[in-house]
View (cartoon, rainbow, N blue to C red):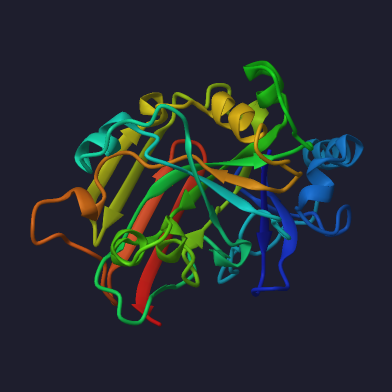
Length: 285
């Protein structure tokens, strides 16, 4: 299933994109697409049955904002340097274990919402990423199979980053990762039955129409199952939590000088095979 949330920010309603591409209203069946729903097998079964019946009301998508596909996210866990080619372009040694940092849940916005370039920013950068959405509480998982069984689905994530804040201002990466609007997510939460192999997805990102990133999740140093299993050793993952799994080569930081960091007026578009497409215009904060 392709689940999504539509409407004005803070007042989104649950919806579903059916096999014919029609937008269907789920608000008569569930209150939201969130951790509570994702953990409720019976409720998800009702959603699936309603979708297959073809009787869900059709929504007019014209002019309708698409919000983040998951509401009330508890935490956004991020994996750094998780692609062989990205580690190489930044001159970093591939990590022996996953690098973990966090984004605050309030950085998450809709896939086509405006992204704000922070005040005094000189190095705002782009990163297309595969996001994992957790479906069941996960702690101390022991195997890849167990890890994948705790995944509800996948989404497109844009891990916008400010590299000067991240690398040159002391401390950890978090200062360059948590600026407002820095995590567009969606358009859809695509359930795992529609993603048979999360290690065989193409990722692409364009800036002002120019292709900058063109990678595949096959290049991940730590694949999806290992990421979920590993993270569960250090923290409890709850339904609705999101894990950003890293970005392939092609970010501004890896380009020759002068590096083409983002400025107000730039337009970034990104997509992951089968998971949908995003478009953001950048403006000054």
